[in-house]
Length: 115
Image (cartoon, rainbow, N blue to C red; front, side, top):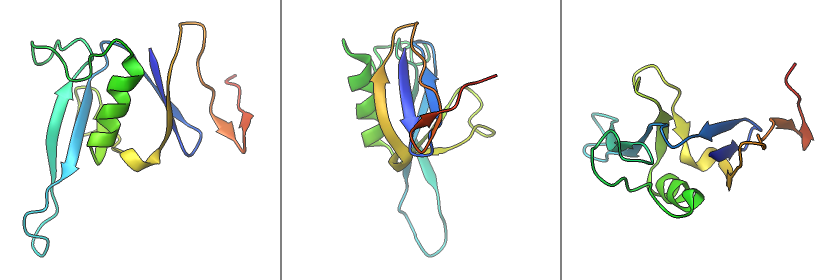
């Protein structure tokens, strides 16, 4: 499991089966359109593309960080039309995690416990 921590204190938990979709700004004609081009859609195990995933690495954090640094924004899951779009520059950190650790959202460095 990998945890993506955002600047606002929220986080995403990425499992091996989690689908990540990466997008880049397509700069065709800046005066007539804005468009995002999907450049990646798969999970760590490559189950969507049926081939080795670019996310696959002996250190899952390295694969996820490489993905984040290569795209302008990303979504999580199959539903790419209704999912939140996360800007890559809003990521604060990425960490490996065992099943025992889950990053808690924080406000000014103080963890907020879920009730």
